[in-house]
Amino acid sequence: MKITILIAFIFGVLLFNSCKESLQGDINANLAPETYTVVDTIIRFGDNRLKTKIDIHWWGDDKDGYLSGYEFSLDNKNWEFTQKQDSTFLINIPEGSDTFNFSFYIRSIDNDGVADKTPAYIVFPVKNSPPNVEFVYSKTTPLRKPKATFPVLKFSWQGSDPDGNENLAHYEIFLNDTNNTALIVESVYNSIIIKSQNLIDNIVDCDVFQGTSLKLHDKVLQGLRLNDTNRLFIRSVDIVGETSQFDSSYKIFVIKPTSKILLVNAYSKNIELREDYYVNNLQNIGIVKYEITRINEVIDNIYTELSPDNITQSMIFDLFDYLIWFGKDVGYSMSLAQRTTTNFFNNSGKLFMAVEISSSIDEQAGFLDFTPIDSLVSMPKGVNSFRIERDSILPHLQGWPLLKSSKYIASARPFYQDISSVALYDAKIVKTGTFGKKPWEGKSTVIAKKVFNGNTQFIISSLELHNLNGNNNIDSLFTKIFIDELGLN
Image (cartoon, rainbow, N blue to C red):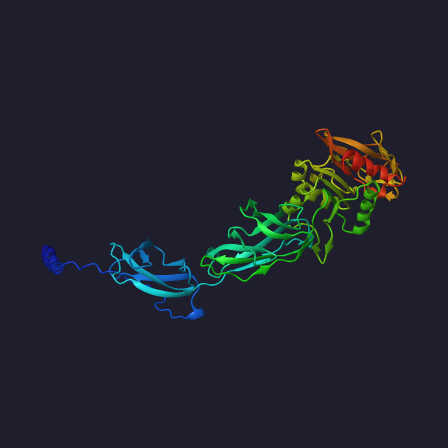
């Protein structure tokens, strides 16, 4: 046993001495890494050159260690470190040229900080691509793309560049004539609202409100033709100065307002008949100057006069001092008016609105908040509807005419006026339901006015006025509403 241990010990000593001798010598020097690009040569000429947005891929190898990253350069002098193996470069072509040879250098860095002494090198022959732009329109149904409007117009567009949208510099906008001086709009905007600076001349300059922020441009857009057809032209310009083809908007007739009174026809059926009713009765009391807009007329699935958005429609209403609004669809009229008349009222505008409020409308409908109505009368259990059967519409105030419905009104809805409003008329209403038909004895107000600073600001009727001439005295009602209360002249 002892002999075996001794032999093993001697063998181990000999083995150690032999290993020690084999480790002697100089340490090998660190080898520099190597770097490669996926493609090392690109040959293209003329229009076949690459776009100015380039994706570059690379990789490296270190035979005696590992890579800590890479450095790239565009001039083989100034280097920038990255740990990525690919990147996208948007190439700025020198001004005055649409082609350029883009040089790219890449070198590996190993774990000892040693760089590849022979960086990979590649040249990309690039050519600038012209940008694009086209007008776009709302995607609502029906489409809000008016054929006629007052001198506040909204236009939207979409610009792009094959080399990357970062390459877009600005847009050039012209009104009616591309030989005019261009209005320059920064590429961060994709819409404008133009508004006539005056309503007197036939050809006018326009203020320009940019984007959703409505930033006022420091220059005007020239050449809006009133009482005539207009068209906007646009082209995009990239950072090299190359331009897109022109795109033109649809043609739109711009009406020159000659009155501060606007009739807002919100009917979608019997449009001309209802309009004529107001026109004739206003003329009968001496109001002969007014403008008319049909905000709910649809032809070929396009609103003929409703503005592209509520902000533009609000600016149109701001052109007037008085709105006479009439329609059938209470939800459409009320919700649109609520969103488009704030500035109108803030500028002391006065509104009359007559829309049918039917029995089916929610008594807490949110779109009533801006009106003289606080809430609608709730129908008690078992009541299906409120009706008016050729009966009286009774005035609250002295001097107002006694009215009578000229037809059976199948759906009527009384309401409670808010604290700043005054009831003008109650109706003799019949309730119908499981019990049959009985007189309604609750709140029955159907016309009311809102007073602000001692002046009537808003009169609302939940009944259509053309149904209230059973006593042949509608002229007296028009006189009280439009001359005595609202002060039209």
